[in-house]
Length: 162
Image (cartoon, rainbow, N blue to C red):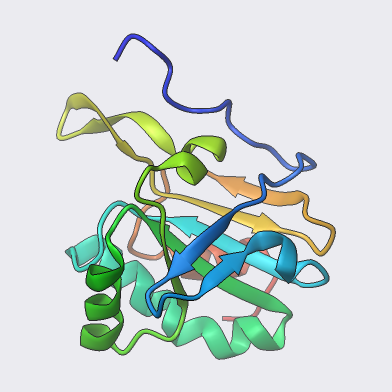
């Protein structure tokens, strides 16, 4: 862990790193193909864990109103496609779930690296959320977010009614 495994943190106004990842159905999803709409990109450590399930269900519950406000939602984890498909099925998720098995996209967003876990410093996924504007620039970058209550806070930050 001597090498710094993450990019510098992104801030508002930065160009959002482009990516193409595979979703749980096997389809390719590219950020650049979503230009012209706002995109919420969120990174989470592991499908089917309590916090990640709560967050994914909250995004699913808010998806219709987020879409109505012009937002797409992409959830990204290092999980295998089969696990993401089970996650979608088990929890009736309607958001797009993407697999980043080599964590390269997470690193490009600064969402993978050293973090505190139960008082110890470990390397892993840093639960983070980014709002990308219609031109592909970072509008909002939030690192080390809490799983519970995050979507409600994000909606407030974006000026969207609860």
